[in-house]
Image 1 (cartoon, one colour):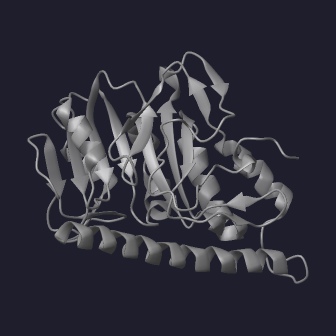
Image 2: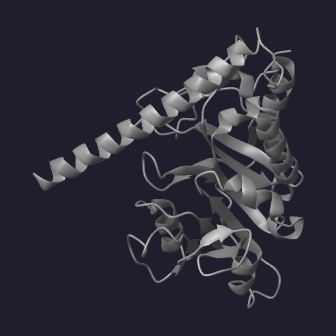
Amino acid sequence: MIILWKKLKKEIIGFRIFLYFLLRISVSKLLYRLNLLLSFDLKKENELVNFLYRFRPYKTNHQLIRLGETGDGGYLIPDDLEGIEACFTGGVGPMIGFESDLAEIGINCFMADYSVEKLPVSHDNFFFEKKFIGTKNDQTHITFEDWFSKNTKNSGGGGDYIFKIDIEGDEYKILPLIEEKYLARMRIIVLEFHYFSNIITPMGFDFMEIIMDKLQKNHTIVHIAPNSYSPCIKFSKKIELYDLLEVTLLRNDRITKKNEQLTFPHPLDSKTNNFFKSELPSCFYKKLN
C-alpha cells in the first residue's frame, strides 16, 4: 500500500509539473503568434532558426553511455571518464543515481543545494554543501569559483572534471559569470536549461546567446534531449520548442572525429516517464533556412 501511494504521489507531482509548463509555454506560443499582427518585441523566425541550429549534437570518437536513473535523473555522457578527478553538481533532487554511478567507480562527487537538508543516500565519495550556487557568498549561497577552488586546492592545478547543473532557472545568472579558466577544466558539462522558450524574447535570446558563446568556445554538444515533463509547442512551421532541455557537452581537445547526429531519440534516451513521447524537433539539428 505504501509503495502504491508513493507511486501515485510521484504521478500527481509529475502531472502538476506538466500542467505548469503546458500553461507557460502555451502563453508564450500565443504571444509569438500575436507578434504576426501586433508590435510585440519578439525575435524573428529566421533569427531563431539560425540560433537553434547551434544546438545540433555531434557523434564523436566517444560513444555515449547512460548514468543514473532510467527515467528522470538519468543523463547521457561520453564514455570518457578515465582521469576524471571529480564531479561538481549544482542542484540536488530526490534522485542522485548519476552521482552514485560515478561514486561507484571511484569518482568524488561534490554536490551543493540549500533547499535540501541532506543527500538522499550516502557514499564515501559524496561531499555535500548546503548552499545554493550563486553570484555571491553568504549564509545560503556560494559562488561556483569558491566552491570549486576549495575542493580542488590539493589537486595541483591539473585534472579534468565533470560539471552538472540543474538549478531551476538560475543557470542564466550563474553560467555567464563563470570564468573561462574554470569551464576549460570541465571535460564534460551536463546541464538542464529551464524556461527555454524565453528565447523568443530579446532578453531571453541574449542570455542564451551569451551562455552558448561561452560554452561552445571550448566544448561541443554531444547530446541533447527534451525533458519528458515538458510538452512541445509549435510556435511556427519551423520552430518547435520545449521549456526543459537537457544538454551534454564534451571538451574539444577530447574529440578526434565528429559527425552531425541526425537520428533521434538516442537509443539510450529514457523510454519511461515520457508522457509526451518527446522527440527533438528538427529545428535543433537541421538547417531550415
